[in-house]
Image (cartoon, rainbow, N blue to C red; front, side, top):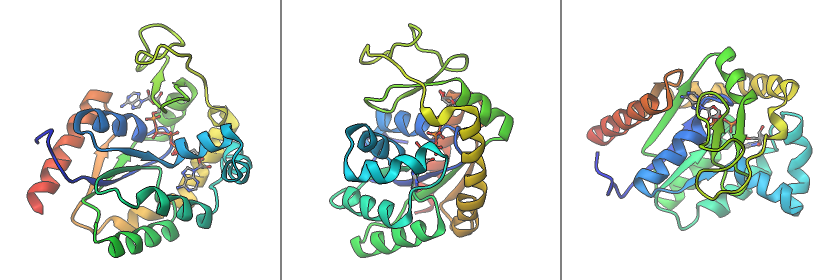
Length: 223
Ligand code: AP5
């Protein structure tokens, strides 16, 4: 696969902690295609106290989804004018997926792939409980599985890492329940499309990245 790939419009799907953000950042670094993380956008709005952040805060802190109308409106603004993108954390409900298909249909920019990152619950909980995040750019580390060079410091910008409030044990449980109830139905929504690929997300980060590359090469060959 060439690093000069011009077109990549991907949905990265999977439960909290599956590694969507980690792989999105790796793809962004390798191919220059922008990651659009709804979670990062919402957290920036919460931190800045914008009207969107005020609406989103309580949902996020309790492990629930922010309402579809708020998310779809936000993403319509984000996607206009972008030809390639990595959607990390969106869509998250069937209503959001229908709205995305509708928007991309109007823009004449169909998805080129949907990657489902699969991992079991015990691993997801361990990953989220040990995660450290750079709130300035959304980059994540893990205390044991993917540690920064210096504990608590981002390798890239040298600033402090933090633990997300929704990575507390009780909220992790709620987020996993929310995923099963509201987001897992998207596997049925996208599952019969040719560009839908399941990725074994239990493997180490670099092995998952290789699976992603193979999936993208396969999708490209099929187009
Ligand atoms: P969001 O920020 O999207 O959180 P999430 O989907 O729960 O996903 P995470 O960021 O927790 O996990 P990830 O899969 O990206 O894993 P990561 O790569 O960090 O959403 C937060 C909240 O915002 C939601 O709860 C909701 O309230 C709201 N929201 C967002 N989008 C919304 C939408 N569309 N609609 C409504 N509400 C929305 O990896 C996790 C850890 O594991 C890291 O420490 C990492 O270093 C490590 N790791 C990653 N891969 C591996 C590996 N292969 N092996 C070992 N360790 C690994």
